Amino acid sequence: MPPFGQAPPFGQAPPFGEVPPFGEVPLVDVRIAGGRIAEVSTRPLPALAGERVIDAAGGALLPGLHDHHVHLMSQAAAVRSVWAGPPEVVDRAGLRAALRAAPDRDWVRAVGYHPSVAGDLDRNGLDELCAERPVRVQHRGGALWVLNSAAIARAGVTDCPLAGVERDGTGRPTGRLWRMDDWLRRNTAIPPVTLDLAQVGRQAAAHGVTGFTDATPGRGAAERALLTDAAAGGALPQRLVLMRPEPSGANSGEPCRTPRVTDGPVKIILDDDRLPDLDGFTARIDAAHRAGHPVAVHCVTRVQTVLTLAALAAATPITRLSAGKEPDAGSGDRIEHGAVVPPELYGELRRSGLTVVTQPNFIAERGDQYLAEVTDEDPGGLYPAASLARARVRLAGGTDTPFGRADPWAAIRAAVRRRTTAGMILGAAERLPAVAALALFLGHPGDPARLRTIRPGAPADLVLLRPGLPDLLADPRAEHIRLTLVAGVPVHSRAHAGGGTSLGS
Image (tube, rainbow, N blue to C red; front, top):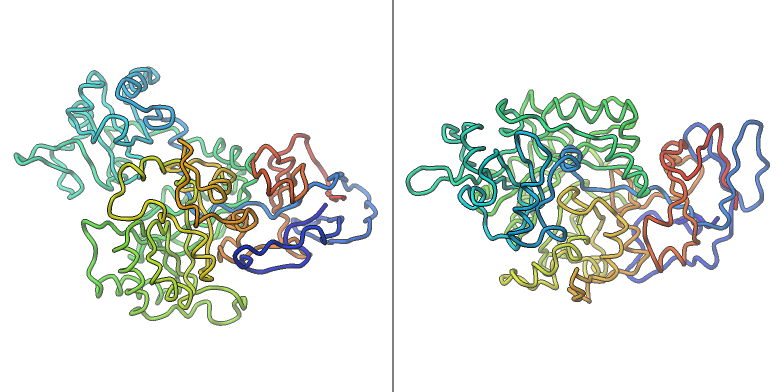
């Protein structure tokens, strides 16, 4: 099989437009032992006693995909929720039908809503659609929940003192709750959602995903324990990186000690309507850096990106990575999303060693809405990729599931094509070559822009595909996957595997 990145190996995303010489890569045999790659040989490897031999038939062997920005608990809840937005639900009648067809439970929980369906919802609009049951609907961006009158009364929203409760001129709640997920989760009047993390793990394994970085801000101890237990028990077979809440004593949590779960950077959320001042924001970054943690800052607007770069420039540089780090490793600090990145900032991004973790799938999933609604920015420049790569800015990819489709291969295709659902090209100049688009999801969990390679000693987190690399790059999709391994153990396969494993050409 031709292994991606084996010969010649490369430790970071290839220069823009540069494709490794796949035609020169020989077919190899790969031996796995003890959860790691033991041998890579251009000569046939004899099978050892008890080993299982898999004939790869020339299929491509990749490091397993790592989705560098997800929200696993929300994804597990979304599996048990009503879908309320495009492409399945596109108008008011469709939304009414979806809400009323919800399983016969007390509450209706709906996700994925966009105003293109039925406008900017509030309690009155939801009452017209479904008043007889408590209903809560989440905007697809994740920051906003809208409750109908029955849900407002049941949940006690009127008496809630939090600033996230939007009220009209008389003080009456409009039903719109901003960034109040923690309050909703703790509210005993709202029945908890049955989380299906095992289904999330199975679906991801079928997509060749062997690792996640969960980017949920302010994760509590209970949610952290659920994810860690799911990884330890096998419900989530993937390796997990859990972003940390901002340092705040008891809320900072104990370090992860499960072999497949590690702690990641400190997640910081920015909202344009309540941006911190520069000094205060710099102090928050300093607090994370002093604790030895890089930061991952949510940036979806121009002002958020500018403020973040200014604060990082003023903050004390993190020193945790300075000793013994890989030669091409970045600072560890990240910009999440990078929906708007002014080109005049590219040089500072490159010099600072920041990694931009982008979501190219949003161009395919939301591009038509961007074309219709975005007026203060060039829609074609949203979620830039190729221009960042040309400027040698460190780049990686995530799906942002459940706020984006949980399929990295769809994101890879979107990065290559930049085509909206309606077929419009959005930012042709930002298209990536297929190999660079694939590389967005092949980075190290702790350093997303540094590619993992097929080499002895590396973890045997691998994906075996049916076609060779050229055919895969011409048509990147999950249907090509034949086998997904985490630490050498099959987590998705068309046939059961057991014992040791040797992958032959």
